[in-house]
Each structure stands twice: as structure tokens, then as C-alpha cells.
Length: 174
Image 1 (tube, rainbow, N blue to C red):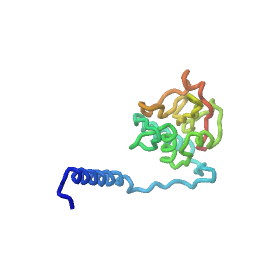
Image 2: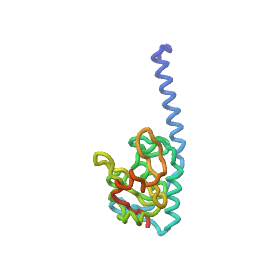
Image 3: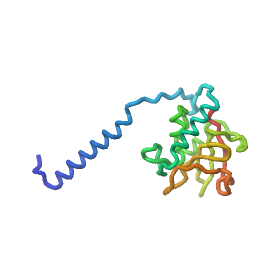
Image 4: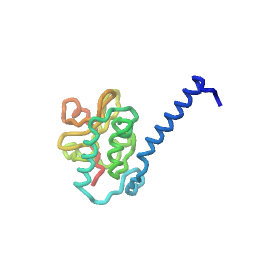
């Protein structure tokens, strides 16, 4: 082997750190989450659980307030982009939705914004034709991961900024 030269020591330290990180990351893999069956097209098949299921979705989203924004992020450990947050919240509650914003904008059933309910997905058109998604958390409020340098937060989608940008509200839950 090598005689503990600086490059060898650095390699050994790097290898050890990688092993420790893998061990720590694998620690969360010891349980199995069972999701309900998924229908063709990506919509979930759910038992009729109504309001209780909607409240569970909202509580899950609200529990993530403060998690940092991260482009491409889809877990509390790595952070969330907008669609990653919606995807993770729904999946955590046994609901299959597409991972990407454009898919979320077409999943479920469209409902009038005035009929938006807790647990629905709100889709907004933002700068340069991009889309942004959020979980409706209550009457006029949403939980979302807005932008780089920010964190997941709950705020009104009826504000002067968000309301004119609202494209659709999607009903996923019965």
C-alpha cells in the first residue's frame, strides 16, 4: 500500500467520509411506505377518506414550512423546488401525482378557483411562461416553495402578486 503520503491520507479520509455519509443516509431506509394502487395516467386510486385525508395533506405541507428551496429538490433533507414539494407531500400521504410542474398542472380535475379546497393543487404562470405549483392549505392560503434563497412558506394566493397568475386549481383528492 502507500506510505501515508498526503494524497493517500486524503483518499483515505475521503473514502471514510463517503462511507459514513452512506451509512447515515441508509439509516432512513429501514421502513417501507406502502402507497395505494396507481391508475393509468398517474392519478391515484384512493379510498373515500374525504376531509380527514385533505387535512393530513395540509398538515404534512405545513410541517415543511422553513425547509430551504432547492432547484430539483424533492425531500425535506435536500430541500424542495415547487413541484418537488407538491410531489413529496402528496406521495407522503399515499397520493401519486407527476413529479414535474407541467404534469401536475394537468393531473386530477380542474375546479373553479372559487371552489378550491384544502389539499388541492394551485398552478400559477410566472415569469417567461414558467409554471409554479402549490398545495392549497385553506381558504385563500397555500404552502409552496417559492424561489432560490427562500424557504417553504404559507401565504395567501389571493394577493396582488399570486391571484392574477393563477392558471388552474386541480382537485386530486375526492
